[in-house]
Length: 368
Image 1 (cartoon, rainbow, N blue to C red):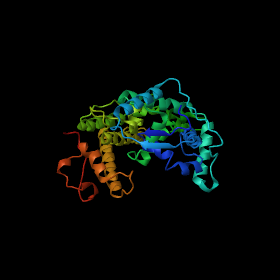
Image 2 (image 1 turned 60 degrees about the vertical axis):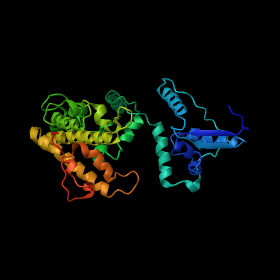
Image 3 (image 1 turned 90 degrees about the vertical axis):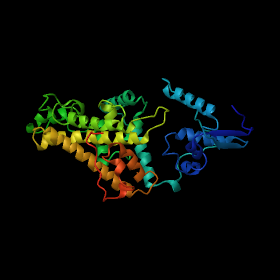
Image 4 (image 1 turned 135 degrees about the vertical axis):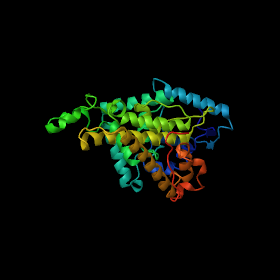
């Protein structure tokens, strides 16, 4: 432990960490650190710096400047993250050096509402079925992509800019098991004529979301996954068999080069295709059970629906990219790079085709 009377130089490779105790510190402290996930730690660091009598200097360093130190730091962090027992970090604060609560001047309706929701969430017990589904997604992602993710990663992935609003809602509701599936049609007070919907008319099994998305023998899921597999083969990247991880955890997909560099455009394409696939399978099931009163689709109908879905999604991305303004918005160059492997005649497209509505673009039908 360095004495408080000794000058101290702290180095970090994280810009966000540096800004949290410098540039953003005043604002966050005024807000009572309500929006920070590591609020206790941030408050303790700032208080400790104030307590010191000697100067404390902060410096941001790049990994290439000191590769050995950065590598060792990452290894220690990884060991700590993978440890079975949580390491207790001292975050006690001397009241003399810390500002308690939030400032009235910094408080807004949005921030107050967030604080109330956060407090209620801490008191809410997790739903058993949600916990089970999250475990299936996390385990599936681990098996498919060799990536360790958390429940927070799963929830955040549903808000990916590569997942449409309707698909995002579907993924969220499916994880919470909120849809009218299976024995929900047999609940007390449910009209008798609807009870037959609890059982799959083709498989004669009580329906579940797992059955609908991955196991049902009615034309739908098998054809969609088959078309997606054929389309994905155009990327030259190995296929993953459909299950809760690659499908509902599509936004957590991880692809790397041989040198360990993330292939972000490939990950984005996976997220788009798989999120659209699971949502389409669900829509086809609802159409078959409710509107068609149990009559199955023709296989070619399913294939046509899949192709139309992907064509519409490509058009949506093109139109969205034209309107992009913010740093996080999907740019035209991003759209071109993401969709390139599966666009028919991509090499022959003119420059600026993404934003040119006069250029007709289509998806390959499985051929090279």
